[in-house]
Length: 144
Image (cartoon, rainbow, N blue to C red):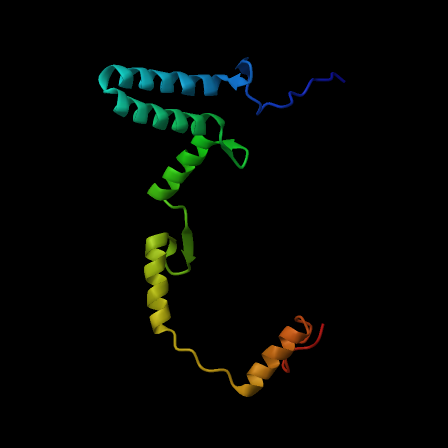
């Protein structure tokens, strides 16, 4: 049987200049371009403010990782979540509905539901079920 080498560490980025990866180098190259353009266009105080802000933001995007993933993936996921939340609720009458429709349906159902208060005997049965960690099922069912 022929053996194959399985690639390992495929999620590690290649280093091009010391400890800096290609992605980090391109981020800092873009930041340097923005800082250079702001040096030519604005006065020194505004240039300094914009330069520090761009440098900090580029450092965050280049080096910060959240849950082992680069920061720009976190930002992309955050924007997607804000634009289109993926909460879907199954309603047996309507099928899948979006989260806003589900909230309206739940509010309507809460208004329609009339709960009867527990009787003392039913409450005692429920307390016994909880105390026995589910082994006792009530008077009508058999024990396990």
